[in-house]
Image 1: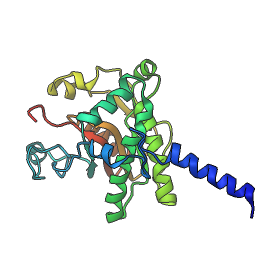
Image 2: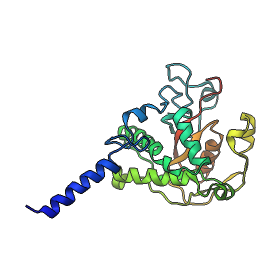
Image 3: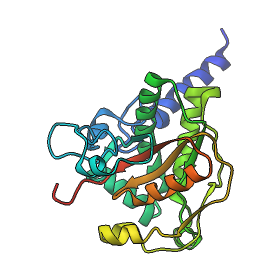
Image 4: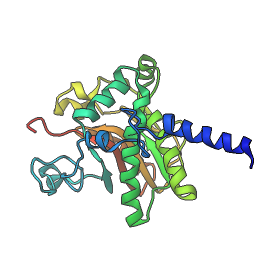
Length: 250
């Protein structure tokens, strides 16, 4: 019997049980990154507009009034969570309290949604593009949260998809040229005005791309970027966000 190998195997098992096989949030024993209790704490965006994933008030997923009047320019929108409760707390902690380690559980939820969706259609985008922050905002926070989120997402997808993984670069081909007031602090009308001339496309764009942002509120930022990507040659654009903001009356 190889006692040295047996000892090493047991040490690995104990290490995995203590530090790996536990919930990322509450540290309870779990073979998944999130235990069932913490996973249930996320408010899923189960009932939403099928086009823009705007959360609905009831238990139906019908096309919202805004999409009936003006359908979005993107092809698909995937937004697994509602921006409220635990999701809102974690994203605020990432953006405003330097708690970047909370990126992992949120991206885990998003990756599971993406894999479930694209496994059924077998048409993954060939490029992931994130909506960047302005250099001034990055300097204030010390990082660009969407850049870190996409890097984590790419690692998870690479393990699952191998050669089918959409390509990703640390520098987004979209550049935020103007430093603007944060969208969540503005009225709906001001949010639209806030996007004029803000973004530029400076890099190479594939035919089928995924455009990532952490949260979609009014959708103006993403719509602006979608228009620019289409002008740059993209033929199909899928929007990926972690969470969608419910209307205020919800």
